Length: 193
Image 1 (tube, rainbow, N blue to C red):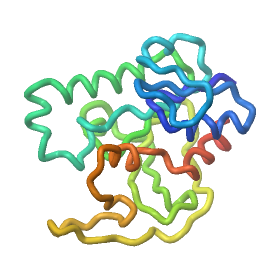
Image 2 (spheres, helix red, strand yellow):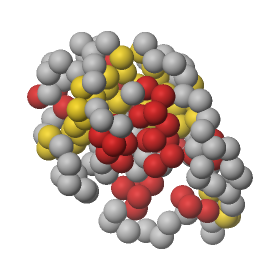
Image 3 (spheres, rainbow, N blue to C red):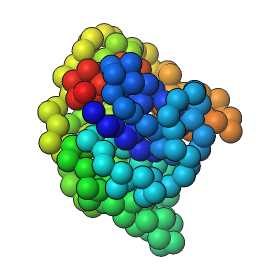
Image 4 (spheres, rainbow, N blue to C red):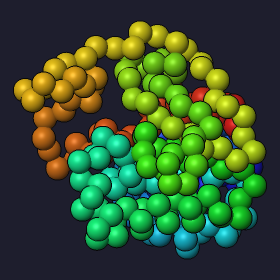
């Protein structure tokens, strides 16, 4: 099966499908973090290349409700509308089966509600990160290894965050927070491959 992993620089989902014998390629504006089939450039360049399945991780910067305090400015300057248009373009791609993955976001109110919400702790990681899945012609992702939900910390501002998510400021903190958990990548390849 030909599988496109859109908006993925980590290679985790791509490699999970490769390990199961599929012809998988990741695509992102960033280079891949690990060797493997990767197209560095706009996903629009490869969307029409005859894929059987697409798993897309569109950037959540202008969509996730965790940044809701910035929504007014993002709506005013068009960033949020452009991000939503990108998601809609992925949903309209000529691919028979797809999954769009994002945290809780305005996709739910502006395009459609997710088909499923999953957690890393359902797939072997003692962490919480509510992740929405919008699905086309795919079954719901079944839990593979339910474990503890993990620890929380309270920030200096009084905000309660999962301990794994409470990282010190750094230029690549966003990358660390956005990588797909390996257990979820493996579940996608096992159940949808």
